[in-house]
Length: 132
Image 1 (cartoon, helix red, strand yellow):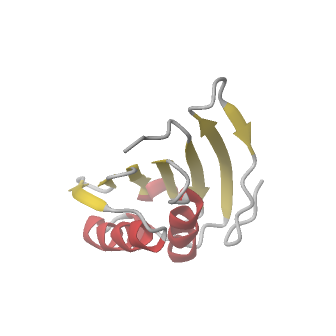
Image 2 (cartoon, rainbow, N blue to C red; image 1 turned 135 degrees about the horizontal axis):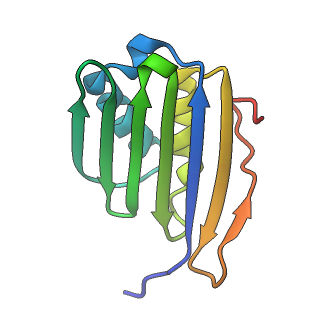
């Protein structure tokens, strides 16, 4: 089997997200697995950490690469990213799922096209968030 170096990496900073959503690693883990499955990715493993006094990190290892979230509930902030190799899994679908769950007031997003030579940076068209 020949593997492609082509990949897409979508990174989004979200602001104005509800404290309770961002401060629940168990809930975020379930949503992240759903997001991975929604984009057709194969989940290999999941790690999560609930921080004290607040905050969470969830890492979903995918056969195609990874999906992650790091939260700062006290600031209403979450950093999301999803990188997938090949052309069959679209990381933007996973990000869209998470944005529909988190409902941020503001987002800042970039998509990197990787593995084709020089990195290409493009503006993703996100349905569930207004790009600023």
